[in-house]
Length: 305
Image (tube, rainbow, N blue to C red; front, side):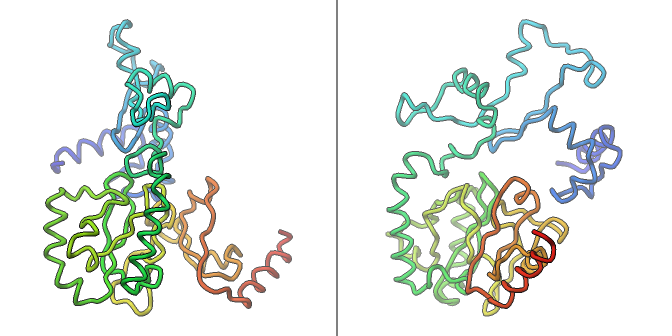
């Protein structure tokens, strides 16, 4: 967008919520623009394939609709994500059937479960094969179950926006392949999707730039992504469930989770407060720290939990 277009957008948004400005850029800022959030819930739908905004039926809000009544239902239809037709294996619903399906299941409009990289029927059948492949590759390269020390870079899925790791057993191997990696990403227009391999297992670079195959858009962030004391590559903390970044008010780190007595003594990974609110669990790893577990247990008892 040009600077003029950006200014026009912010002017329009400011008409909806006077607190809107160019500084509102991430999810953690949404609590500052409550009027805009409410407006978006009523007037817009976001899916991995589209973003649509339309008028509501309130004249006081959006004025009188100019679309002729006979075309209004067509104009106001939302565009659902692809939905598999269980009666036709390997096929998706046509548009009208998908819309009818969405009437009974509103979440079908925005679900990620049927994306090409997600765990649909076919992918579930291949899950064991992929998991075995990942395990064998990890052992062959000495990655110790995809050791965080061996993470050299990350890719971003163009469907879900989550970060996925690139591993290499040796620094020199990765450095030698950096230019080829960039060329490969440019050749696919940066359109990496969770579970895709930049280089097939038969390719000579597949072990120098190793990736996990058994991941989908619904998979959490790889544990190897998170910073390791012995690793030169330092990455920003993100939610292990959704990949969202943010300040400590929204993204709870290990120390904050310990303060809330939510780790049970384990090394727990960052989690976004919104993910906690919808029932996502704190993911734990590493060896149990019995002293920390005892401390949290006593704190819970004192708090009457």
